[in-house]
Every structure is written in structure tokens, then in C-alpha cells.
Image (cartoon, rainbow, N blue to C red; front, side):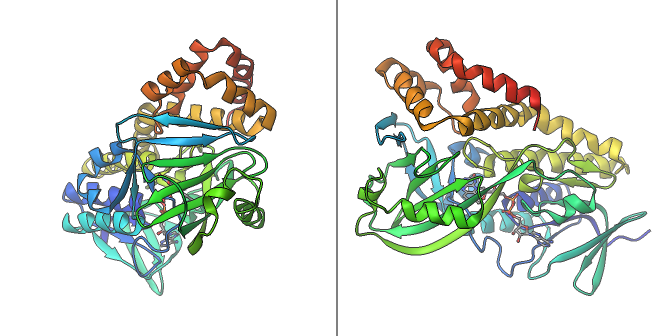
Length: 395
Ligand SMILES: Cc1cc2nc3c(=O)[nH]c(=O)nc-3n(C[C@H](O)[C@H](O)[C@H](O)COP(=O)(O)OP(=O)(O)OC[C@H]3O[C@@H](n4cnc5c(N)ncnc54)[C@H](O)[C@@H]3O)c2cc1C
């Protein structure tokens, strides 16, 4: 039987690019199909990632715009808590450049990139028949790295995310914050059930927020960040919006990320930290497992569901536990009233607790800090009951 490719990856985001790069490196024939003309555009991301990402994709350091060493965190009442050390905690990237660098590395390994073409159908028979415009491409395996609203996920009959967060952000000039710290705002007045951010990214500051509510409501709250009386408004006084963007974040891990001859990865599989909405680090970690399983399956000439189940086992073992805990932490947080968030703030604001936060805090593994804080401050246990309840309820 003839195939055009061993593997077709749908979606040329960072996760699709990294998956393709790892498969192509093993000498297999891979195509990435991206609907947009240019990889990395349009940007729908605040672009904050940890140094850990660059341990995986070292060459992507050319996309770094800024480094931050801590955060100013504002409570619902506007009280400020400053955390951080002399160590770089996070790096701010140019997402278009980051995605392009990853895709370039995939192409250098031999992957073929087809841009400006949307995949509109998939028929599974003896092989995967992928409809792209008026063409049908055949492959032994298909990988859906096609983002939060993944079509490949539904064509493979896999579960939707449990729910989505809606995000709205802007690149803003003239914001008055130091360039080595991000600012984060909590509370129902500014960002109910999630948080708002200000991220210094070189010449501009990225300002935005996410919420469970719909896009119109998110935009309404975005405008509130500029209104007097809020902790954010004085920092935004006299600033100019240069560019805006909106996007969605999928939450709730699917029970299956594989089927016969197919796998999903990245946002398509809700590989996202629910505490921050960050999907780049977990997506890239899972991309490596996805690529490894694809290579082993093709070497063994076995692309059955049973074989591809190894992918799910691998990412669950690596990062699944943390992603599940993050969802529980997010749900507990989203259920708190402003008074309760203020209460938590007060419990963690003493010098010793801040020292623990600075030592253990890790954006990629927030549950580690959660446990340390619970051990230190038993009063926090009154919120831990909810954590267990949400855990038992599942996604
Ligand atoms: C407002 C906001 C802020 C964020 N900030 C951060 C942050 O600071 N840090 C962080 O780590 N994460 C952040 N994220 C999340 C991050 O952007 C995603 O997790 C990440 O982009 C996921 O990468 P991906 O490759 O899985 O999917 P995507 O980047 O969504 O890429 C999927 C690609 O598939 C293409 N595609 C889709 N369907 C088809 C089709 N049928 N045919 C062909 N191509 C198709 C799309 O055009 C797209 O290019 C943010 C998200 C939002 C919405």
C-alpha cells in the first residue's frame, strides 16, 4: 500500500512543530498542515514560559524578549504581595518567532510544511485519508495538534474538553511597572474565577485576563482594568493599546488521547496547566511522548489503538498527575469568594511563608507549593476539603 507520508500532523503551532521535529529526526516522512499562511500568526498568547522550556528547545532562546524574577500579586481589596528572588523565574517570548523557530527545526530534520491549507476531513480505513483542499493525502498515522477546537479530536471520536476559559489581551505601551516582575490581579471586580495579568515584554506590556464567561464578558472586564478604583488602573494611566488578541484555553483532561491510527496532543488534548492557562510547557512535554510512541508504532508496523495507548500511559506518568491536581486547585480557587481569597492572602503574607513560596514556587508544578503551604499553615486546610471533593468528581 502506498502512503504519501508516515505521519500527518494537523496544526503548525509549537506542539505540532515539536511533535513533527521529533518524528522527522527518527528518519520518518512527516507533513505538518497549517491553515494559516504563516506559522505563529495570529498570536493568541501572553508568551510567558519557564526556563525549563528552553532545556527542551534550546535554540528557541532567540525568541526571548524579557526575563522576570518575580511577581506583584494584588488581592481583591488591592493589597500587594511581592514574591521573587534573584533567579529568573520566567521568560517572555515573541510567540511568532518561537513557533517559527520550532517549525524551522522540524523542517531541518526533514519534515514538510504545508501552509495556507485547512484540513477539512478525515476518513479512516486501511490508512488515514486526510482531505486538504481538493486533495486527499494518505498517511499511516495522524496526529491532531490542531488546538483547543480540534477537528481531529472529533474525527477520532475523542472527548471534548470539560470546559473552556476565554482570554482577551493587548500589547500596551506606557504601562508603569518594573520590567523584572509580572503583575497579577485577583478578585471578582477584575477577573472573576481566574486572574488578570501585566507582563513586561520589552517595549510593551502584555495586559490581559481569562475567565470562564464568554468573550463579550471578558472584553467588558478587560476595560474595567483601566477604570479608577481598581489596583490596575493607576498602572495603566496614560497608556496606549497597540494591539489586541483573544483566544480560548481548554481545561479538563480527556480520558483518551489516542484511537486507531491517531493521537491528539497539546491544546487539542487539553494539555494545559489549569492554574495559569499555560499550555506551552505541558504541550511540548506531551509532544515528545507522542512522537516517541509514533516512532515505536511505525517501527513495529502497529498503529492500533492498543499500541498507541502507550502514549497516554507515558504522558500521564510524566505530567498527568500535576495537570490533574492543577485542575482541582483551579476549581477550588474559582469557587472562592473575594473574602476567602483575601483570607488566603493574609494567611500567606508573613515573611516565613513568603520565603517558602520563593523557595518552592514553580509555575509548571504549582501543586508542590500547595502541599508545602498546607503543611505550614493548617488554617488553609479549611479549603483543602473542596480540593478533595473536586478530585473525586473527576474532570
Ligand atoms: C489569552 C491566552 C494567553 C495565553 N498565554 C499563555 C502563556 O503565557 N504561556 C503559555 O504557556 N501558554 C499560554 N496560552 C496557551 C497557549 O497559547 C497554548 O497552550 C499553545 O498555543 C498550544 O499550542 P498547540 O500547538 O497545542 O496549539 P495552537 O498554538 O493553537 O496551534 C494549533 C494550530 O493548528 C492550526 N489548525 C487548527 N485546525 C486546523 C485544521 N483543520 N487544519 C490545519 N491547521 C489547523 C491552527 O491554525 C494553529 O496554528 C495562552 C492562551 C490564551 C488564549
